[in-house]
Image 1: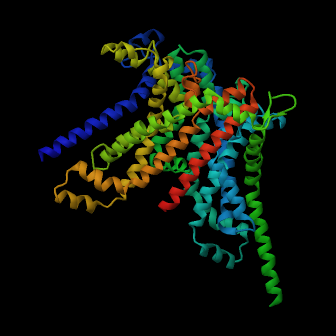
Image 2: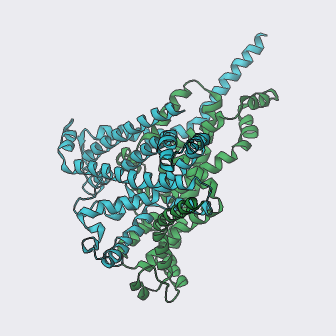
Image 3: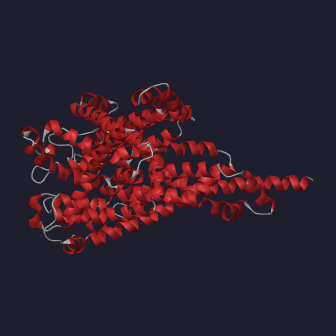
Length: 276
Length: 298
């Protein structure tokens, strides 16, 4: 019994050390974002002398224009998620249940995208976007993030639809449904759990993406949060309280959603990373 | 009878058409913005091009240059260093934490949540925040190493040649180990408990049980996580670009940052495309091995 208690204490000590390693940066951001500039010298792990939450957030939100960047992130993320989910669902269903001639070849080609690093396409993409006049447009960024996400989306939705029994489709057809009616009335209502996973994964990947906006957006007014944060900290690297407030604005939406939907988040991020 | 057969034919043609139309939008976007640029990258790698004017065909000269480019070699080495670092600090810590959390402990869910949280954050955020921790003026590392009298480490790590890569590994592993933990916890849940119980009765100690019984049962998960680490490490860009831009000097360049700079800072698009092709071959190779391993596991 005593031996067990000792090993239990040991386990807790290890876990707490790792938890400290994990939380130090988080605590540093949170405390810095509520401090006054003058109060910084005591380092991030003392209690702030005066709370300046509102002032810091207001200056990042309005003077730092993070209200604009926040809106930009939303206007990039929401259409991208809708596009990816819609197109992946259509393609995934067709690959899994309709088997048109050549479906396997098309599917194999789409799988290549899961193994290709973005660096393999970014240089010609830059010139392609330039020629299509999509450089410096939100639409361009949405299209590119979508293109890089469709492989995984179609792969995942195909796997999901394959898991649904064919009897459902046959029964619907016997009742006189066409392919589209079967898809719309019988299959779609069942896909909601798969959608939630894909939506979460896609939203995080889009919200956090730096490289694609960095390459294709130059106009300061169009920048999403990660790119804005990168520029902001480049320019105001020593205004720590302001940068910390900007970091908080960037991460809060995801952190709040994570706390609400924890299990779902963990499974969909893990599933997404395994795609290879 | 005949008309019925015809109707079925019509139906299956119709069905194929619907199937194609459902794939078309995805396939079109994919082909234009992903498949076509891959081919273009390969073609561009055989040319010299500054971004405007005509391209000059140079055959394999870019590839020969890349193999003689010290920075390509150094970047590749840094990719390897980062990979090994993340395997040690990320995968190993993830495994240890997963094994400890596999017992029914109070606060288990809380620990899990805390450990997984960093995975959510944008790499830019990770880079900015860890940049502060290694900062020479306000940084935590400076305070700690000053306090314990190790002056040689009480510097800005990101500005110090020997330490910068190490600092990046610490930051990268920080976002990564929670993810490894989740995979290992899932694997541990499916292990056969009765084996370890039998060993315990036979007088084996905890370490023996872990090493001889648990570890072989989760070896597949370990291989998978290591492969994912290798692939992710070679795809890395954001973290290093924001933390150091490859500096100090060129101490922390990896292939992805080197090629980004060659293309978009120096306008050496042909040469950058060459590095991109080499990087792609590496990632593709690792991915194929990964797929093979997964299929074997299933």
